[in-house]
Image 1 (tube, rainbow, N blue to C red):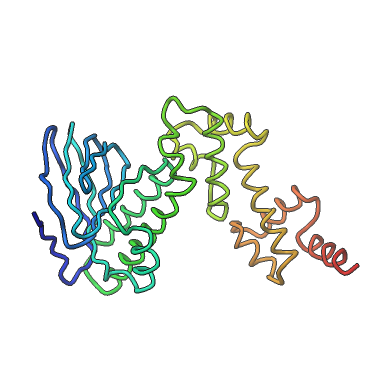
Image 2: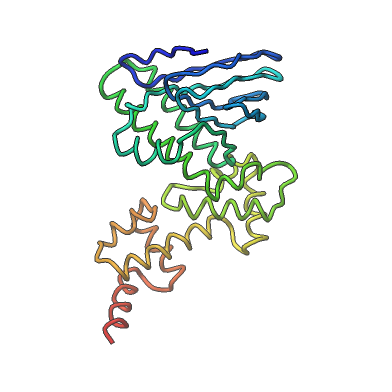
Length: 281
């Protein structure tokens, strides 16, 4: 059974869908893409004949003409993002949507990825609430592209961590996930508090489990990662120091200089000059 979704002139629509306990949405399909993100509750989804459980943060990408149905065990609240493939630029349609999402799929993102998904969906809800304009439509398209890229990347090492933050997870695994998150987000304005809020634990606990595993705090590790990248840029490129400072995540040049000297015992300028002398010998 086909269910029409009217995207005329809009191409992207995001809305809430609530299901009470025991509610069944019979099998149907759409002519557009749909992304279902579980905000609360539990249930199940049937995708092309296969039934899989649904819980908070689970994300289903449903392609056009894919038969599906949703069942709720308790109150189940979904955020539905419906979009026409034409909303994406041609290269994104052919190199992202077609290649990575040829069929409907269900992903269970780890906590860090789920937090980013929620933030992108919030931004899209905000944009949609504004007065419609070409700029609003463009913003929605950009955020949709970012969301799909995040989903693609989460199917790699991050996807392997789905469920890794349950109560039975070891502190070692938590520490490894924190390290992986810092490695991929070192250029963002990260704090231990940010990481703790994403994990749902205290900042003190984040510092403790990370230090037990790596003998340093997350913020000390963040500084080391940033400085290692900065060293590579100083040695291999002619970029200005202020540009490198910005690229690796520092807003203040003085803070960058202090961090760099604390790790390398040299200033960025001295490090570049010394490296040039060594290469010239």
